[in-house]
Amino acid sequence: MKEKETTEKTSKKSSVKKNLAKKENPYIPKPYKVLEYFRETPDTFTITLDMQIEHDPGQFVQVTLPGIGESPISICSYSNKYVRLNIREVGNVTKALANIKKGDTLLVRGPYGHGYPMKLLKGNNLIIIGGGCGVAPLRGIIDYVEKNREDYKDVHLFLGYRSPKDILFSREIEEWRKQYNLSVTVDQNEKHDFCYDAKTGFVTEALKASNMNNENKVVFICGPPVMMKFVIEILKQKGFNDDQIFISAERLMYCALGVCCHCMIRGKFTCIDGPVFRYDEIKDLKND
Image (cartoon, rainbow, N blue to C red; front, side, top):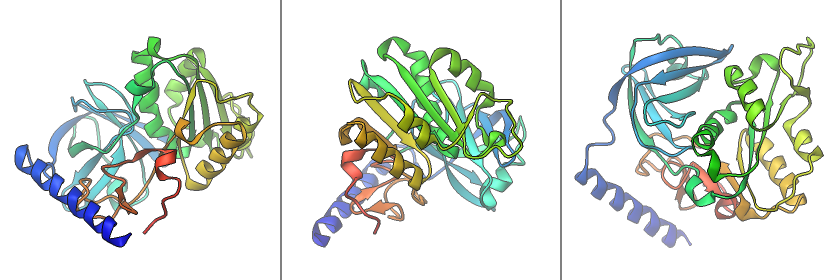
């Protein structure tokens, strides 16, 4: 087994090196102008960059601040005219990024990774389940569906947050409520803040109480590992198969090219094989 994993790892490294020789060095970031800065919650913000690239929902980029470091950030939009990044302040790089202003320039490389295979899922009903900051990469799916609405049937959104002040994308939620079947929950609401139409309770409770079945549906999940674990258990109880479920995995990614091996999961790299995986492809894998 170890020999096979080593062979796969060597093969992937060789493939990356060959690709490096054919195109621009993917390790070198490019400058992009900040078009908008918006504070979403006390510890998260969204920036819009004039980054005109082709990408899939669920992919990520590496944002660099010279002298401070680099951080992988999920793309939370779908457009070939700009890129939006939702960032949570959790470390030196992301805290420094919080000081960025409209008109500033950021160094970014990417996009990287394997996103959601939206073109292969045409004709399905979609269920999007996000928890906390995990809603950010899922927003790319929502943007994609808005631009390709005729390709999909009913869309159900289950979005869970810690409290009303932690709700992401408040500017978009009311519009989503008009277009889709939307359920927003907050884990706690001690101040009884009802400025949003959100129920108190876990997102898993809202999912369990729904009348969901597995007929002609695919599910996209992103959030804390424990939340995704319970969501998958509920979906399995409702009859969903593993190949109907897509999850977005989080691992520490440095190079984003499958070279450093920090994000390796038993022969699979989160940065190039993921971060989006169909559940049957990853459910039996354990961290090295």
